[in-house]
Length: 203
View 1: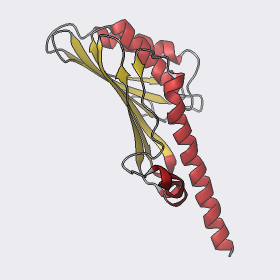
View 2 (view 1 turned 180 degrees about the vertical axis):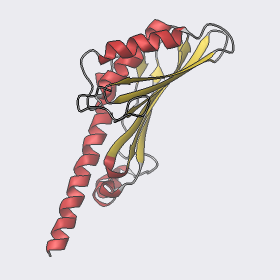
View 3 (view 1 turned 90 degrees about the vertical axis):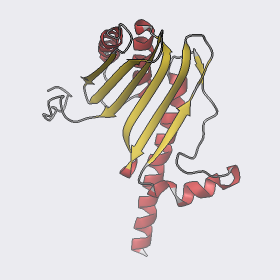
View 4 (view 1 turned 45 degrees about the vertical axis):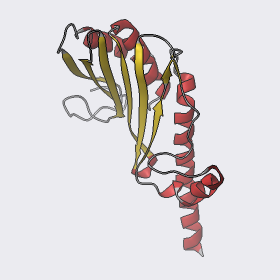
């Protein structure tokens, strides 16, 4: 009997973590200032699972607490010229821990715009340990990197850390005037050279 109560309590706690993750992803597109794109209705059941509307409550009760890996893939519809594609992928691992957020643009090569929008997207994601001023440092790093793509065949890669947040960026020419820019953001406890971070996020 005690064992059964403990298992139920553990399942309830895990389900609460899942629900918090779901709300975090659901509300992210509203917190991110990116009016150049329209996001579709939010899909409550994450990939790779599918549940019909009438089965979602039962799916939540039976499966959500015990997921080892899951993700939400969000694909926006651009509403301005100059953006061909915009999507984001939120990935979670065992224990309902956030593993990574990936944001990808295919657009004209506008370093200022891309750096600003991506920095705001990361800020809206509210990673643990994110501090005032981190968005500015991320913006400056992105602006320099994306601005380095200056001709056909060019590609840049870079890493940057803001406190307990690791950012990995790639930007490559995708056409005569377009670039593909991808930013991968993940929690970290180490510096770029692998040393443990101090409690305040410094090297």
